[in-house]
Length: 136
Image (cartoon, rainbow, N blue to C red):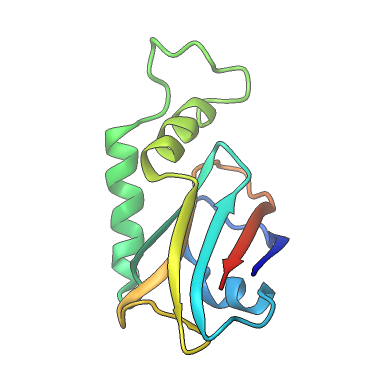
């Protein structure tokens, strides 16, 4: 059986944010065993699973990705939406637009130090839409 729900997250500032609880609150009842596939319907934000305990990890992700893909590169052509837009597209392609998480005993089977990240790459906060597909 497959269930699907689409929902919007509250706007988040640029950076990396643990959204595990917000996602779980939007999901219909989880099966005893299955898979959750989460997809973000945007090209300037991404989803990842990573460290959920130390907030410095979130800051370091932001610092590293800004170092790898800085704004205001002189050779970029897609600049009409601002200096953060094209770098946001590149960062989103690097991180990815979906994650798949196992469901065990009716709960997301994340590791003890894992959480779901919203990776927001734009300077202006905006609501982001996710599609959750549950396979059981």
